[in-house]
Image 1 (cartoon, one colour):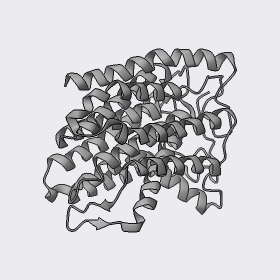
Image 2 (cartoon, helix red, strand yellow; image 1 turned 90 degrees about the vertical axis):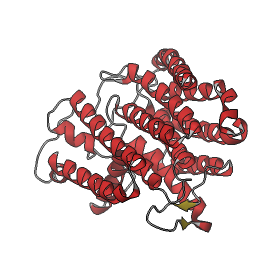
Image 3 (tube, rainbow, N blue to C red; image 1 turned 180 degrees about the horizontal axis):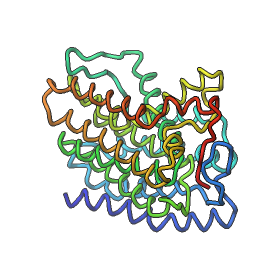
Image 4 (cartoon, one colour; image 1 turned 180 degrees about the vertical axis):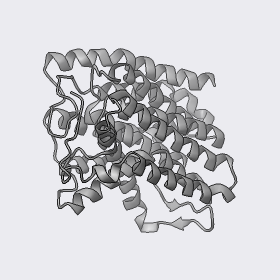
Length: 357
């Protein structure tokens, strides 16, 4: 327990003290988040704050290398790929936040980063089936792993639309992973998730509304990349277990929001990678419930899904299907409760969407 607390404190402290330096540099050189037709902010806010999350995580990772004899894993063999892959995500994110990168360049970097961690052992070789035999992926192992990593990386990036939203979701999912990894006896998962928890919570000090800094694509993509990698290492490798559903449920909000975005854009004839103001958080903002309440509502929904994921671990497999049904019902009822289906057609109905400046 002391080592876990130390891990958390190290990443928290480093991020906490590095982010103000990034704010000063970004402000000095005018590196800010551009206000576009898809933005919810109008004022100048420095960006690249996600670099602080990256530094807090990676430096903390090297601080804890002496702990790894406890988990019988060679530190450099197991985590060098994670560091290299994260660095590629960092480079692409910085370029995107300063110059702007199209989706081709983004996917090129993300796929390359995925191949790096796959080379170092982060690979989905089978799909666990708690109701029967596992599904061996064979030659499809690499494509499925790339799809998962790039999918979650972009899902967290897409949900980063309000102050504190992506960092808060990253912190909540990290906490969920820590609790579940502790229950499973996965010390590696606990340590790595603790690093991300510390870094994201420290960043929230500067990013919660009204934000002093944005994490930018460099931060949101990094969080998604790390969460995807943790889930492969800690949960997808458990045979004949409902643990395969843990990351899917815990990351349910970003996943659902991304799938909805992808399909609605195709249905209206828009490019699937072109941004819009039709995300779940936009829907809540449009209901005039307030900026902070919107963020807290999403936090609450994310926490509910996290509890459902935890129940999969502590209850017998007889409860797996009822929990999955409950999760699906919760998501559907929530979307209808907030009026999301009608919100998608608000342009046609002549309704004016409302966003804070």
